[in-house]
Each structure stands twice: as structure tokens, then as C-alpha cells.
Image (tube, rainbow over all chains, first blue to last red; front, top):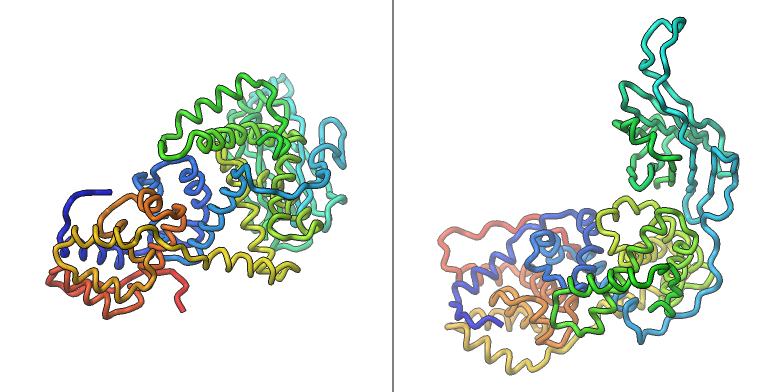
Length: 234
Length: 250
């Protein structure tokens, strides 16, 4: 506790500032930050002195729903960490990755369980070495080119979406296009691209295409395959 | 914890213990017991293992997360069939969100709990079968009131720190809940750390934050109280209108 004396005027000023401070975040912005706050609190971090959390803490003083979520998450984490808490036994878990619905060696397709449509496609990386110009080719070997990696209707998935994956290569840089076309044109898909130990995320646009630009071909050549994890967005 | 959650990903025990030791050393809250800090250090270190195993699609990691989500859902009163579906969804959402955790894999387990909670709320909003039961449990948890410790002693100390008791009278008239009043006094007026105030009041930190939030809300709801407080500030300009309050006041 502080031992510094404080006048009533100073106290009133502090209180007035707290009462009239604006809410700096939307609920959506705040809720994305809540897990980090709760985790930090449980780890003993002085979150009240950390500028990272200042806006979120101020938001919690304004928004009841966010405060309720914060409370619930704090209590859930407390339960999970409490060795004395009695948790019910769980049955044998299902398998998530073990059984692909397609496996040709170069193409492996897994369906993922859950409330939304999800699938994961692993494609062997093609040979991306620059093509050598020949006498008959009429030009240099380093022309822009397109590699079609996959194109098929996914009959195994409800709605049978059409999936097409292609690489567009220009001057040592590639753009990966992932098209997921559904019977419902408004359906969007979130696509995670994993290349080795790095990953990126993109969402399909109105034409059903997710784009991953500026991929160095030299990086692509280092990995044996690329993995696309696609989840329907609602 | 390994027995409790059926954790089996540790291949290199020495490496894992070193990671736990590093996490333990980084936990700088000396007010927590060593046992608690150790549990958190293990929790965070195992999160890193789970993150890596999930990224490389190891079945064991997905199944361990499913078990944890399943057990938490069962604990919260979901029927087994519903809990299985929810647990599957938790794992799949974590797979989607792995890229967001790349910089801080230590929070994966906490993020899994967050995902459980988000799913439960979605389930209730969509009229899930357990809706009324779960709503009652959640409402009960939120409305639990805590009594402050040593309220008379704390009030005396505050009086000694303030030259004039008028602001105290305003707060006593507006805030009937003693915890709310004292949390507000100590955190806002006296600038004390919420963690310290929570400890002194004998409540969890998140409950102290809730009490402060509720106190501010009550004061904001009364324009006369706001005016009275403003007068005590001694400022000449009229108070600005309160903007951006996004709370769901009714």
C-alpha cells in the first residue's frame, strides 16, 4: 500500500478521470486479447504496469460482456491448474490425422472433424528449378510460368467443393493461389498455408480464391511439401 | 499434472525440466507460492511441446487436447455426446489458430481453455440442450459477492489519508457494496496495485477487477454523483460528456 498522503482534490481528480475515460477498444478487439491477459496474470506478470494491457484493462472497466468473459476465463484457467479439482474421466479420443481419405503419395487429403467443414491437403512440392532455355524455346529459361499443383472436386466433403491450387512464378518469386469453389457462392474459407516451420493465413475472396504472394522460390525449394488447412468461415 | 491430463509428449525429460526451470525463473510474482509458480511453469512448458506437436500433426497432441476439452466440458455439465463434439471443435479451432500463437506457444493451453469457453457460449446462444442449466451455473458464478476483509480497519486508514471526508461520503452513499467501495478507493483514488488490493481484501484478482468495474458503472449511472465529484476536483471547466461507454447498461 502507498503511504503518500493525498488531498481530496487529487482523489476526486483521479476518480473523475477514471469515470470519464473513454473505452479504447471494441469488444471484438478486447476479446482477442483476453487470453493473453489472463495467462499473464496467472504467470505473475504485473499487467497493470505493462502498456500492452493498458487499453484492455480500461475496456474492462466499461464493457460488461468483456468483463464476464474475463472472469470466466480466469476461473477456467484456475480450475485447469488446480490439482485438487476433480475432473471427470474422458473416453477414448477420436483420431484426427491418422486416416487420410486420399493418399496418392504426392497428394494426401485429411478430413477434420468438428462443427464446420474442414480439410487438410498436403501436396508434394514440384521441381521448381529454372527451366533451361533450349535452341527451340525461343527465349530465356526464366520465363513466368504456372505450376498446377492440384485440381479436383472433393467428393468426400459435404457440398463437394472444387479445389484448385496453382503456383505462379515470376523472377524467382511465387504466388500461390488456392481456389475453393462451393455451390454456395457466399461461402468463404480460411486457408492456412504451412511451409516447413512457417505458416501464413488468408481467406478466400468473392471469387473463392485465397492468395499467398511474395513466396521466394528458393524457400519453396527447401521444403518437401506444402500443407493447406482449409476451414469454412461462418 | 501429467497423470491428470495423460500427457505423454515429453521425450527428452532433461530438456523439459530445463524449460520448466527457465519458465519458473521468469515468473516474477514472489507473492505466489513456489508450488503454484511451478505448476504454471509446467503448464507453459508443456504448451510449447503441444504447439510443436500440433504443428507437425502428431496424433498424440490432438488427442491430449481433446481429452482436456472433453473433461472440462463434462465438468461444466455438458452431456457426453455434446462434450465430444465440442472437444473435437476445440482441437480443430486450435489447428486453425496455430499461426497466431507462433510467437507465444506458451499460452496454447490457456488459449485452448479460452476456445472451450467461446464454444460453450456459442452453444448456449444457439439454444443448445444444456442451455438453461449452464446459464444458471454461469450466472451464479458471476453474482457471487465477496465480503471484504477487515473493512473497518481499511476504512479508518482511508479516512486518515484524505484530508476531507466529503468524497468518502459520496462513495458511501453511492456504493452500498463494501468491496466495491474499498476496491475503488484503493485502486483508483490511492493508486494501489490491483493485485495488492485483491490480496488485502482476500479476494481473487479477477474479482477485485470486477468490483472496480461495477463501482465505476454505478457512479457513471448517476449524473448528480458525477457532478459532485467534479466539483471536488476544483476545475473551472464543465466536465466533458462521457464518451465511448460500450457497456450494456439497461
